[in-house]
Image 1 (tube, rainbow, N blue to C red):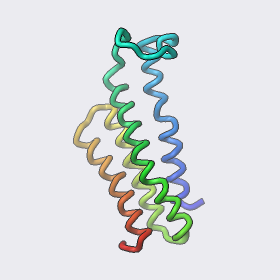
Image 2 (cartoon, one colour):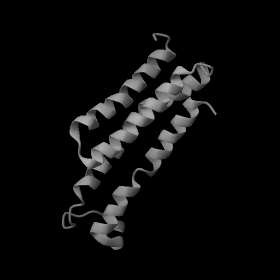
Image 3 (cartoon, one colour):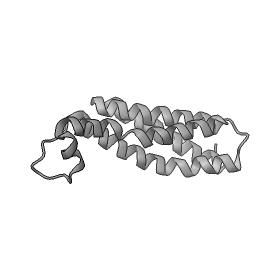
Length: 132
């Protein structure tokens, strides 16, 4: 397995499980029955960190939607190139750090970690089309 395949898979796995902390907080705040029910205005608001984690998860899904097709293209078109693997690693680090930092509530680092993931996606696209 190439590092491109490994880090793309790791990113997908992370995004697939990143909802768990948010739901655990929802259970703590609303109880199991309240968690399973439809949200209503009368329910207590969830913890601030959980609301930020939910937002970060949404951002990760959107970022991965742009990154994943490029990663697949790189796997098909330039399988021997090591640079996409480095970009896959930096994408994963950026999107993982973004989630943690956003949940904690550190604003500047949150933006920088998201920029790392976004610039990794941009660089991967540019590598595929032969600009870099």
